Length: 64
Image (cartoon, rainbow, N blue to C red; front, side, top):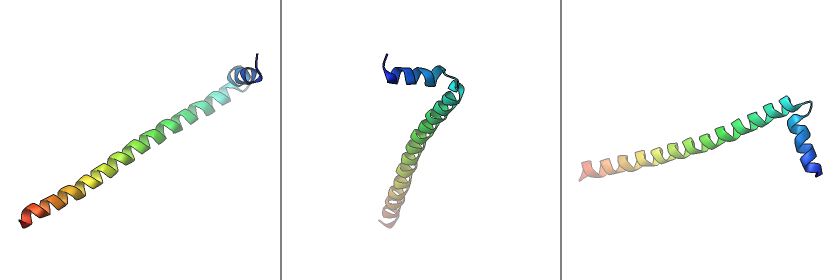
């Protein structure tokens, strides 16, 4: 058994396992929220660019 395996086992099942599980769950939730924030930010930026594009197209069509 390697030292890393023993450490992982103690972390998962040892006396403070519930604390470690909470920290793991929080870290997973943070990663999930960061991923979602990145996606929503990209969507927002695309919509901003589309708004500018269509506003310019609208101006071109009304001026012609």
